[in-house]
Length: 143
Image (cartoon, rainbow, N blue to C red; front, side, top):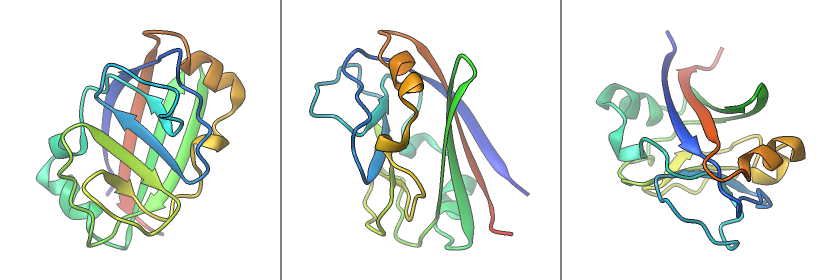
Protein backbone atom coordinates (compact mmCIF):
# COMPACT_ATOMS: atom_id res chain seq x y z
CA UNK A 1 0.00 0.00 0.00
CA UNK A 2 1.52 3.35 -1.04
CA UNK A 3 2.40 5.96 1.56
CA UNK A 4 2.64 9.57 0.45
CA UNK A 5 3.60 12.86 1.99
CA UNK A 6 2.61 16.25 0.58
CA UNK A 7 4.10 19.62 1.42
CA UNK A 8 5.03 22.93 -0.16
CA UNK A 9 8.11 24.77 -1.28
CA UNK A 10 8.75 28.08 -3.01
CA UNK A 11 10.17 29.35 -6.24
CA UNK A 12 13.21 31.62 -6.59
CA UNK A 13 14.65 33.70 -9.47
CA UNK A 14 17.94 31.73 -9.35
CA UNK A 15 16.33 28.34 -10.04
CA UNK A 16 17.85 27.08 -13.30
CA UNK A 17 17.33 23.28 -13.18
CA UNK A 18 20.39 22.56 -15.32
CA UNK A 19 22.02 19.73 -13.36
CA UNK A 20 22.29 16.51 -15.34
CA UNK A 21 22.33 13.92 -12.54
CA UNK A 22 20.34 15.26 -9.57
CA UNK A 23 17.31 17.29 -8.58
CA UNK A 24 17.03 18.79 -5.09
CA UNK A 25 14.47 20.35 -2.74
CA UNK A 26 15.78 22.41 0.20
CA UNK A 27 14.45 24.16 3.29
CA UNK A 28 17.00 26.95 2.70
CA UNK A 29 15.50 30.37 2.00
CA UNK A 30 18.24 31.53 -0.38
CA UNK A 31 19.77 30.23 -3.60
CA UNK A 32 22.76 31.16 -5.74
CA UNK A 33 23.19 30.32 -9.41
CA UNK A 34 25.61 27.54 -8.38
CA UNK A 35 22.61 25.56 -7.07
CA UNK A 36 21.67 24.33 -10.54
CA UNK A 37 20.09 21.11 -9.23
CA UNK A 38 17.60 22.90 -6.96
CA UNK A 39 13.94 22.94 -8.03
CA UNK A 40 12.37 24.40 -4.85
CA UNK A 41 13.48 26.31 -1.76
CA UNK A 42 11.77 27.00 1.58
CA UNK A 43 10.49 23.42 1.72
CA UNK A 44 8.25 22.77 4.70
CA UNK A 45 10.22 19.59 5.46
CA UNK A 46 13.62 17.94 5.06
CA UNK A 47 14.40 14.23 4.98
CA UNK A 48 14.92 14.13 8.75
CA UNK A 49 11.29 15.22 9.25
CA UNK A 50 9.80 12.17 7.51
CA UNK A 51 8.14 9.45 9.61
CA UNK A 52 9.87 6.28 10.79
CA UNK A 53 7.55 4.22 8.57
CA UNK A 54 8.62 6.18 5.50
CA UNK A 55 12.31 5.90 6.44
CA UNK A 56 11.91 2.13 6.79
CA UNK A 57 10.34 1.90 3.33
CA UNK A 58 13.10 4.07 1.85
CA UNK A 59 15.74 1.60 3.05
CA UNK A 60 14.16 -1.21 1.02
CA UNK A 61 15.50 -1.76 -2.51
CA UNK A 62 12.03 -2.97 -3.52
CA UNK A 63 10.53 0.46 -2.79
CA UNK A 64 9.72 2.76 -5.69
CA UNK A 65 10.02 6.42 -4.69
CA UNK A 66 8.28 9.07 -6.78
CA UNK A 67 8.79 12.83 -6.39
CA UNK A 68 6.20 15.12 -8.00
CA UNK A 69 6.47 18.91 -8.27
CA UNK A 70 3.43 20.84 -9.45
CA UNK A 71 2.83 24.52 -10.20
CA UNK A 72 -0.24 25.80 -12.08
CA UNK A 73 -1.01 22.40 -13.65
CA UNK A 74 2.61 22.02 -14.84
CA UNK A 75 4.08 18.82 -13.42
CA UNK A 76 7.48 17.20 -13.07
CA UNK A 77 7.69 13.58 -11.96
CA UNK A 78 10.87 11.66 -11.15
CA UNK A 79 10.96 8.03 -10.06
CA UNK A 80 13.77 6.10 -8.42
CA UNK A 81 14.24 3.50 -5.76
CA UNK A 82 15.12 2.97 -2.16
CA UNK A 83 18.34 1.47 -0.79
CA UNK A 84 19.58 0.20 2.61
CA UNK A 85 22.16 3.03 2.72
CA UNK A 86 19.53 5.79 2.67
CA UNK A 87 19.61 7.42 6.13
CA UNK A 88 17.16 10.32 5.71
CA UNK A 89 19.08 12.22 8.40
CA UNK A 90 19.57 15.56 6.64
CA UNK A 91 17.53 18.33 8.28
CA UNK A 92 17.22 20.59 5.21
CA UNK A 93 17.72 18.83 1.88
CA UNK A 94 16.38 15.97 -0.23
CA UNK A 95 18.16 14.89 -3.41
CA UNK A 96 16.97 12.53 -6.15
CA UNK A 97 20.05 11.00 -7.81
CA UNK A 98 20.45 9.20 -11.12
CA UNK A 99 23.49 7.44 -9.65
CA UNK A 100 23.58 4.86 -6.86
CA UNK A 101 25.39 7.25 -4.48
CA UNK A 102 23.72 7.54 -1.08
CA UNK A 103 24.34 10.03 1.74
CA UNK A 104 22.27 11.77 4.42
CA UNK A 105 20.75 14.07 1.75
CA UNK A 106 19.70 11.32 -0.68
CA UNK A 107 15.94 10.87 -1.21
CA UNK A 108 16.25 8.18 -3.91
CA UNK A 109 18.84 6.53 -6.10
CA UNK A 110 18.70 5.40 -9.74
CA UNK A 111 16.28 8.22 -10.56
CA UNK A 112 14.93 8.30 -14.10
CA UNK A 113 15.26 12.09 -14.38
CA UNK A 114 17.30 15.03 -13.10
CA UNK A 115 16.86 18.80 -12.92
CA UNK A 116 17.83 19.22 -16.58
CA UNK A 117 14.72 17.18 -17.51
CA UNK A 118 12.27 19.67 -15.97
CA UNK A 119 10.19 21.23 -18.76
CA UNK A 120 11.40 24.78 -19.40
CA UNK A 121 7.85 26.16 -19.05
CA UNK A 122 7.78 24.74 -15.53
CA UNK A 123 11.25 26.15 -14.81
CA UNK A 124 9.92 29.60 -15.76
CA UNK A 125 7.22 29.17 -13.09
CA UNK A 126 9.74 27.86 -10.53
CA UNK A 127 11.79 31.03 -11.11
CA UNK A 128 8.99 33.27 -9.81
CA UNK A 129 10.09 34.51 -6.39
CA UNK A 130 7.85 33.02 -3.70
CA UNK A 131 5.75 30.98 -6.17
CA UNK A 132 4.07 28.15 -4.25
CA UNK A 133 5.18 24.68 -5.37
CA UNK A 134 3.10 21.64 -4.41
CA UNK A 135 5.36 18.67 -3.69
CA UNK A 136 4.40 15.03 -3.20
CA UNK A 137 6.60 12.03 -2.46
CA UNK A 138 5.11 8.56 -2.88
CA UNK A 139 6.63 5.36 -1.48
CA UNK A 140 5.33 2.04 -2.84
CA UNK A 141 6.40 -1.47 -3.80
CA UNK A 142 7.66 -2.00 -7.34
CA UNK A 143 4.99 -3.92 -9.24
